[in-house]
Image 1 (cartoon, rainbow, N blue to C red):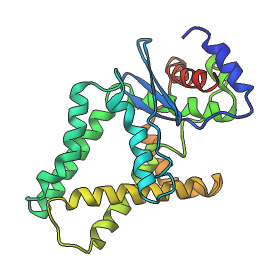
Image 2: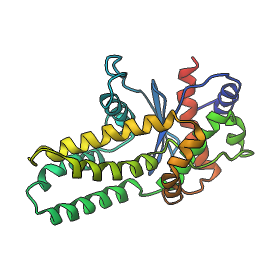
Image 3: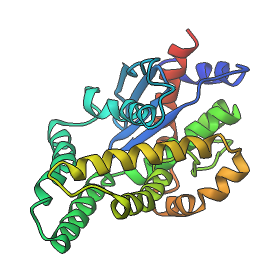
Image 4: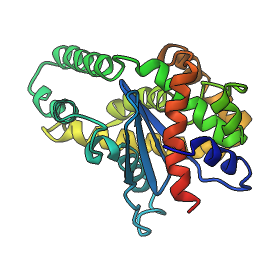
Length: 259
């Protein structure tokens, strides 16, 4: 995108910028605000879109608001041309529907099948350059928050590649919540029970996530130490070229936000 460095310099001077999130892909980086998203690829292409609006009616409803927010964060995968291919979307849908098929299996087989599906899905999502681009995504977002976008673009600043709002931290929170939900489930198991449990687990985890976000940076860092430690596995130190890919996506979002 022409003028990226000038746009980043302009953003550095802004007193207030939107909170950004992101997603690393094997061939690029997605950066998103509450209104816009952009996907910058390793071969120089840029895809842009709008983040789905969250209905004001559900923003104050506990549990529901978390699921809506989570759905909005994942929307580029399913709605964004170029972000995910047809086969990958099919794989993600199959992974979501798998609990229906597992219901008829013995418990031990259900556990094994779940582990196999989760491992295969994780391997698929982490393929290619994803780990380094994951680090680049975090670095670009940290550069926005620290107003060091231009310096990061030029390579004279290297903000952290670890992030408090990373999906890795969310995944670490999901595991104990899922275990407690399954143990405490009061109703007889039925074919739809795994889906209800999954929805409840994600909704409760999102509420915890929002509470931790509002607890202050020092406390949040303490509570999320396991996830931050795991990011040493799920991220790699990005090159300047990979960092610029993430900054390219961030610049696209900021250009529209500042218009």
